[in-house]
Length: 263
Ligand SMILES: [Zn+2]
Ligand SMILES: [Zn+2]
Image (cartoon, rainbow, N blue to C red; front, side):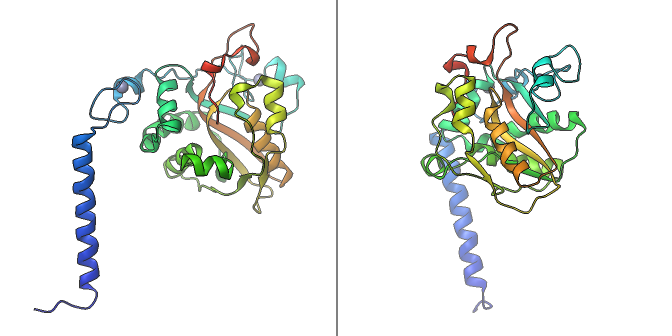
């Protein structure tokens, strides 16, 4: 019996989907997924590793996110103007999260984004803040081509629907190819990313939430916020998955490269 017009393409699409599903099942059998934190077979990120992430607990400075005796501004932020209104982070940049982020960024771990966005949703909801748009920190086109994806955009895509805020993935662009921040001290990091970003959108007066994977000194987030403020944005908050551990008496320059993440 002849089928109705259009039935053949639909049938073909169904077969292709079934074939793809069978193919990924077969791939899972040959190369089963492994937890990026502990190597456990069967999942990309196991519940035990998720439970070992160290949440950042208040009181923290409301702008830089460092531990602080109270929830206001820390002494450093009181004396330094910043285009950023505040930074929040979900967890400390320490194992197993550090290893998971390494796989996420450098090991084609894009499938980890939904699980990694979960603690970010919790951290953002705890701030009680409201924003109009979410903007991921962009990669330079050359870095994006090399990696194939922007890890911050993947986190933003997973976070946006969960908190009910639209994601403006191309609002910011990176117009300057910078050297990886991992090799640099705090002052050099600021100089490296200064003027690196440009805002491309009509967002005057809007409240923006910047998304990035790791915050070390905050230099990248500050440079991104400066580009947004130059566009007339009303306020810029930042939320990262991880935050470099703050050690009393040590400046961010003291972080060793192994403790930091490059872009
Ligand atoms: Zn695990
Ligand atoms: Zn501060």
